[in-house]
Length: 116
Image (cartoon, rainbow, N blue to C red; front, side, top):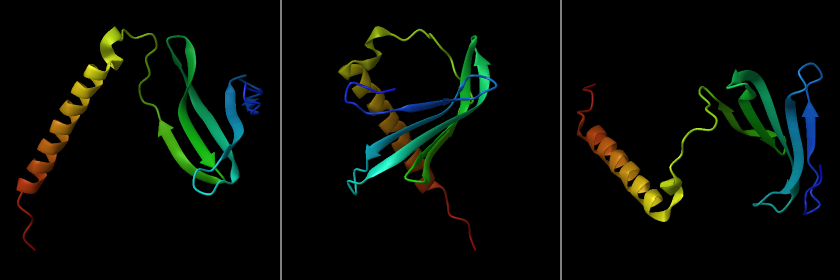
């Protein structure tokens, strides 16, 4: 596949399942400026609401694995409130998460250290 910027993406399909197994493309490394190959691997598919979904996603950049995720729960077409991504909603969520992190950190600092 070639996109509007003339970038080429190669999709590989599993011969038995016809599901995507790899995605390959090139990008410029932000640190070195060098053009590198990026490969995404998709595997361990499972059925979610009738949609075959990869449970494992792995990214390899310039020959080094730098990202891997194992999905344990996936839901499609969930009800998402319209205001979820408004600035006010995101700021409120960030404030809530910050308070939780601070509380957890404070609790950890209060715990007595083990006596050797």
